[in-house]
Length: 243
View (cartoon, rainbow, N blue to C red):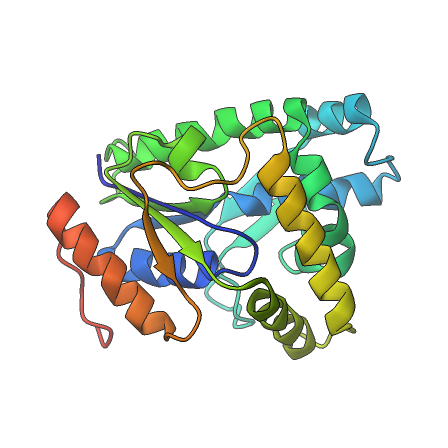
């Protein structure tokens, strides 16, 4: 199986690193977190109480969520286009409002069951080459432990809480959104606690995951570490950054 599982807490660098690794290897890049964010966005749009587990779970089972490659005429920095029904929610799901509830939504057993089923199917299809692709880089919080435990290369990215909050704060500001660092920090602290202590699929490194610190190093340095591991364990050869 040509699959790389990358897990880690919020703003640890999973999407940036995983997307680049996927490009260098010619693998499909899939961020599982966008599907949980899409459900959280829909919960807010429908005015559903996030604590109403039955209503949230039912909504997740009914939603049509699509993750597509960006259209060639889009140049807003997106790695994929996220649709809920026919609505493009690519940037809406990155709002502080969604940040504040996504961990609660992701802890819902019905939500996790439904999305896990869909995501594991995607991972197995692309990882086995059945979909005509060289492999898959799948990022999230339970890829190595639940979605693709058979992935030959598992990575767990880490960075200090304060650094991750600064990254998310800068990201919001650069997108023209109002943001308060202290609020971002507290929301991230709460999300870490919720993700790590939920009963179902808690955030934790897989036993055989390679743990990599992303603080104090460049994205390219982290990418090169993972590509070296991929070459050794999967026997794949990456392209150069210029190609």
